[in-house]
Length: 404
Image 1 (cartoon, rainbow, N blue to C red):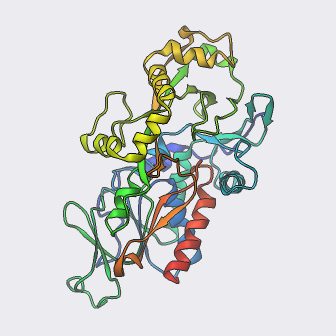
Image 2 (cartoon, rainbow, N blue to C red):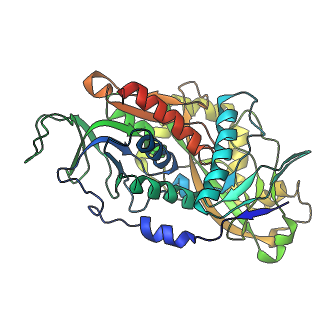
């Protein structure tokens, strides 16, 4: 049964409000000094910022995002599924966060009048009626709206390139060293703060190294390429259809996913991306590529899964190969029923032994700066579904570490 709720607010209103902030539009404080700075404007960073300002409303907050728009990468390039947690190990942290996150997400969508559908999921012989779909970018932008309404500041087009101990007070400030940390961008613009929480997604490992953290776990980008079902064939899919996932991998396998806009996505595959934010097959970044192939963990992962990797790459290049996989669930599907669709890039944390990291990884760094910085180097997937629950855990960790 499909349940639809909350079509009263159009996503375009939120996108208009939160995409393309001018660089200084929301910097309200005269000296750009804040108690807490959150680096990263994806759904996890926004959920964490929202949770922190709710718990500690007397503190001042700023959220920094390197892109012109919020929720631009993983948060805006995903399948749009509200996962129920049915395929995660019962009692595991991932399962608990997913179940709680789904409950919180449905309640939040109702409260904020955000459109969603509780359309269920077919998982081979199992049924998951609590699975749904939503536009996660609209949800993330709503988190941003909450954060601003509670007094938070958002500054986009600010790529944090350096974290330093503040050596002197900002010009004209009487705050002294109340804000002992300085965050700078490529232009040299400075934000002063007492504490930093980073939720860098695809760049979480590089951000953490700016305060002296280890290079491990390394973030390895995996790209997933989707096909799109032609409109005249939408009758073939009434809800989410998923295979039983292979426990050796974090990927869920090819699946059928209805979208809030009425389209149906099929796939994806999972291949090593040669650019951390590369959504096209031929996107390439020399540093990203070199970092990946030179990392011992990647080398071990590839050697253990050569056949899997070659097959996934082949499916990404040859539509017929992808359709052949999909026909296991809908035999009537043909190559003529699909077109190439969008892609997403997943930030997968990997240790030096080639093991996929599937739990929280918090870090700070060394020295004085390390005691005032909390890096979220990894958060359990599915991060969008679990975002409000993940935000609670991150707020717990920050409150404890910083004694807020």
